[in-house]
Image (cartoon, rainbow, N blue to C red):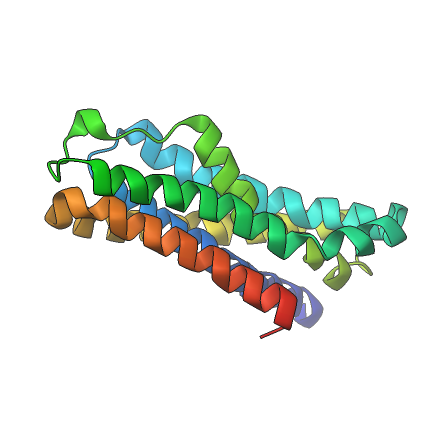
Length: 197
């Protein structure tokens, strides 16, 4: 029982650590789109949770199947995350600056493609978790990834709610703030990945 409790606690803590970038991006999405539909409100945390589940499993598989190639690919992870988040954040920033400052429901679009890019960008570092859970059997790795996904979902729902609350107050400037947040997250992932800060 003690071993199971330790496994769950470790997985939850891992989930909290990994979900922080997804939380920030969810908050940025909420800022940018305070009037989004219920479907979008569900799609955002579900997408982040899915990728936070998928990436550790891919990492686990890579460690067991193609360890050398995976180690080489790991060096590219901070660059990929920076490029994706800088692209999405830059786009939001430009749209916010060009916009009239009069946000409305019609102005707000978070396409499935953008959401997928955000999901990959915020979870790509979770590939490294494959090394952390390398000694797990496949069922344990699956369970840990599922717990990480559950934690991510809850945290992203909270981030989205916070972002929407402030987004309705910030109106047109929310897109600019959201873009700045995304770029900052990209830089943070990059600095941590390259310099181990």
